[in-house]
Image 1 (cartoon, rainbow, N blue to C red):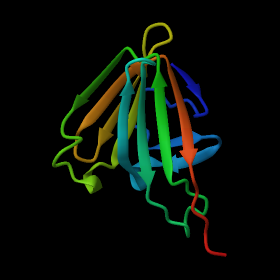
Image 2 (image 1 turned 45 degrees about the vertical axis):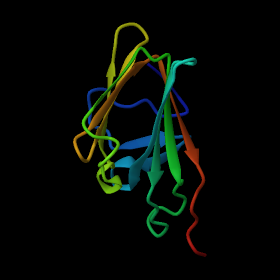
Image 3 (image 1 turned 90 degrees about the vertical axis):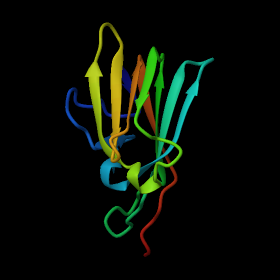
Image 4 (image 1 turned 120 degrees about the vertical axis):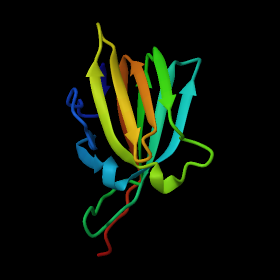
Length: 136
């Protein structure tokens, strides 16, 4: 899997942070799942995390992080990610990357409520939206 705009994730390691455009974001302590989306025409899967900011500790915290996997071969979900799932239980427990055959790779997102999303694709790109600023 090729990583674009996001520092390549360490393979077979439970990541809790991502580095996008040189900025490290702690999805475990700050992130809450906001949206999952799959586009059948473009074969892209996106996952967006809203971030709980703490301007005193993280003065330039983005308001959200989006990871987009393109060239998707499969998407699997297990556990409750909609319906009765409570937003405070949809934080990221960890994110795991596994290289696959050829240029494929697999991203596995495990949430605080033990639900998981597994996406296999060719490329992952990351994006940040907004920023909160510390009072000055």
